Image 1: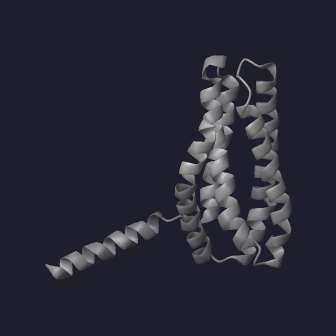
Image 2: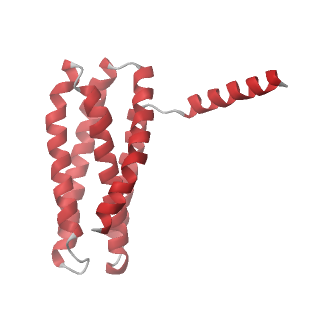
Length: 171
């Protein structure tokens, strides 16, 4: 019996490892999710607009904070990637400022949709730069095992940050 339990545990560990994704894959999935949320926000009416915005707010804040905590910290270790961190953090800060400005508005305010459009444009530019330049630089420096470890750290960071983000949304 003990052997079967041991083999079962090994099998479970293999399954967990197989499910582990590297940080770049995880970020790309979230980028697509954010893009879809913006499309939904553009198509919705005033009644559902704030619900869409809350989803955008939660996903972006969790994404940016975990990315800064995990990926940007790792990027500081390599000359080829370190140069991107300051600009990326600046772009994150701009997005966070817009998110907070939008949070103070009502969906019926004329400025609400305008600010959502500004946020969408800013986020799209950031995603484009990350996926066309930064990710390539990261792949040149960081091996697959480390990228997978960073992916796991990213997921853990998001779980740890989730309560703070929910609290910020309620304020």
